[in-house]
Structure formats: structure tokens, C-alpha cells
Length: 90
Image (tube, rainbow, N blue to C red; front, side, top):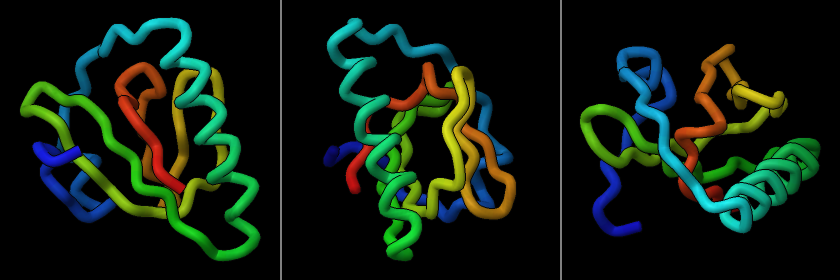
């Protein structure tokens, strides 16, 4: 995504998240990609996560430790709401 601002994972805590309404098909794709990122964690891969905030679209590259129903937890105990995630690249 060309318009995304790339930030370090430590900067995610400073952002205010806004709910992004995704279609059910897009939501399933995001969930599959997050699951794949978690599976690849054992291989020390990082995932590029694109997400929406009140300041626009951001990208962070980090290791995904786990995915819950409402949040994704990155290394360093940094959480991103699942409903704000637009795309995940593994």
C-alpha cells in the first residue's frame, strides 16, 4: 500500500485507532494472513501489518505473537485492534 506511513512498532502505542469497516470476505483474508504470520513466527519471520488510525494509514513490520478475536499482539506487548487492520503481508 503506497500511501501507508511506515513506523516502528514502539510508535504504535501513541496512535489512536479508528474502526475500519471491512467486508466479510476481506475480514476472512486478514484473519488467514494473521494466522499465517503466527505460524511463521517459529521461523523468525516478521509480518507487515497495514492498519487504519485517526491519522491515516500506517504500516508496521513486526513479529506477531498471537491473534485474539479483538486484538493482535506484536512482540513487545504491542496491540493492534483487528478491526483496524487493512492488510497483512507475510
